[in-house]
Length: 191
Image 1 (cartoon, rainbow, N blue to C red):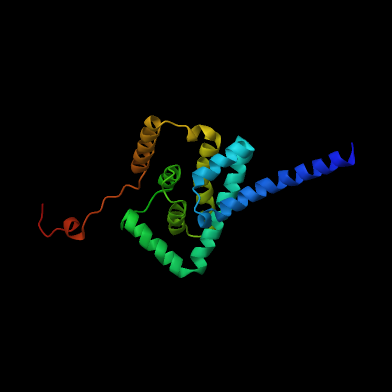
Image 2 (image 1 turned 60 degrees about the horizontal axis):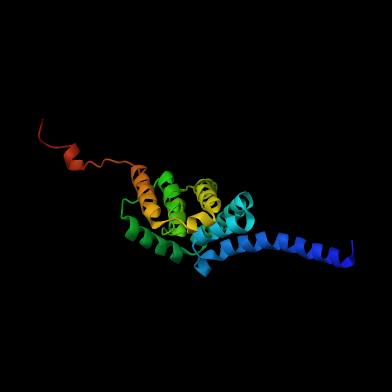
């Protein structure tokens, strides 16, 4: 091989390493760049293929979630703001189950870090947060990376029923509770 070809191979190898690192870095900076998760996962599928794109998206989303977790611990004002947003969007009894979070992460218009905050609220420690986050991120990354270009070309005729189906599944996966008022349970009248 000539010196020129060896230089070309070295340049290609450096790009082969730099591209995934840059892609993961973009995932980490995604909240600051105001990029949707859906767009990055689709891009990962187009650039790196299904397997590598999924792995890089999972790594990037997990790292972004780790940073989010530590920001919640280090900056109480951000945590208070997230609590107000959660209360505004989900209401007082709006605790989501893990399965609801997994399903809602599949929807492109649901804020990624609002769902991360829901996981943060449910978790007793970092280990549980990581486990639940991983469980909720993997289907998202696999789904959108696999669909790649296809998801961009999906007809509105198919997209609307798909979103409705996911919302219905999230509703039926909710935590089911019955609340009985103290006075009703311990009524003074004998029955």
